[in-house]
Image 1: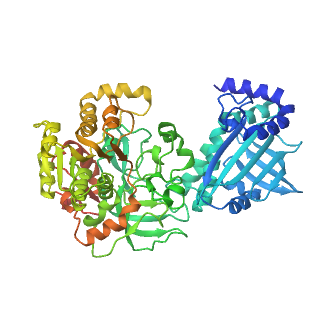
Image 2: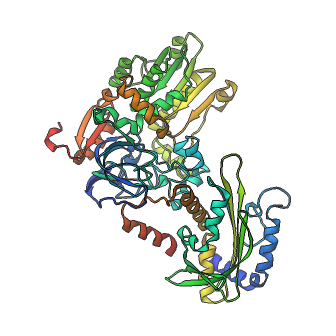
Length: 215
Length: 397
């Protein structure tokens, strides 16, 4: 399993790096059209893209504006993104410090590429990042008083080399799982003001966090 | 603190474990005054529920005194509260429509995948009931951490003793919802399979809801006697052809509503385990599966099937044809406890519902392992065990 993933990661690192940005833009533009049917592209059995694309939707019982505002302040994101240690602003860009295997961290510098108030935010990594990544979060009214449908789509690509492989492994491991957990935590934080844990003592919360993000 | 911990099949022990701490703002810590062993705890005891880890603290029926509160808890120190076994946030879509046992936020994100794979959707968090439902420490202990303490716990007036209200945590609302799901009308004949705690409370609830006749089915003499005392007619399935008897006792029409309060010991959750486990347990498994099948055949066309009994996996040879051709309605699910606690507390205060008849044994927490063993092996006489942390060892007899 892991051999296959590293092989796949290597292929992606070698081939997809240059094409990454274009592929993601194409992916986003197709996402809602979906080709033959109306389902999002990332739910296709064969999406026709590499599997470093992650997509997930949750419904959150809060108004669009409130959710948009929270997300737009990128420094809030580490509260529910377990892999992200900190995000700080640096000259109009954001520097994400992301946990990697074996106690390493990687830095990703992103800038906001599209920003429509209360509708969507897209970001893209700048050249001097350890990972090439693009992401988009969109906010859409759910029917009636159900709140807001929040969709997150992300694309990752890692550089060649040993660190690149480690990073690729991290993101290739189960990117859907990570995205799903992060979005669930975002929903919890917005709807309940806290993130559910079954920890019995404060010590266990720290341990649990390390276990989930540190493997 | 001392707590009843799981170590393996038929191996539970009272151990010393860490005291719980306030972790989230809406938490509270309770000092447990009474906690019961539930029939569904026996599924854990029998080792048929996956995702239970050695050292896990069991118990989902409990009440106690508030001793510590988080900054956003609405409880106050010193209050006596009963806690629903289903943990609900109060803020998600399902909580908003009062389907509390489908709460989307109470099962921690990293624990939701297993039940989502099994059932298509994650389960909500439950106290003391495996990591499938969150891995929350349970209440068969001296203390417990209660998340979302502003939503679930109901404050109990001082004049009502523990024994009268403890069952608001699970089995009373579960029996009540079992009867409510049967949509009982005044002229109805209702049959209830299983005279364990939930079945007995479903019988009591059906009578309060005005059923014309309630028929209880079991084989333990003492349990049938309790059903009779509540006002039910009884059938011993070991002696009588249940379907024939129900047809006759309902005037040849069939029962208007049927309630399966038996459930089935889960046949394992991974599909490839299921056949093996079914083979191992064929005696029990076949018996218990037959309750629901019998109920579906006994209910009249257009009637209602309510299933408060717990099922976890899949079942063979389900009478799907009878379900469709007779046009039956089926309602089931884990209890939306928070929906019923206030109303049922009033009914207890008014004397409309009394649940104390069920309690057969009161033991100190230290004797919990003996309680599990006897509750499992002496089902006729050990109808309900209440554990009291702090009760003197010698008082139990």
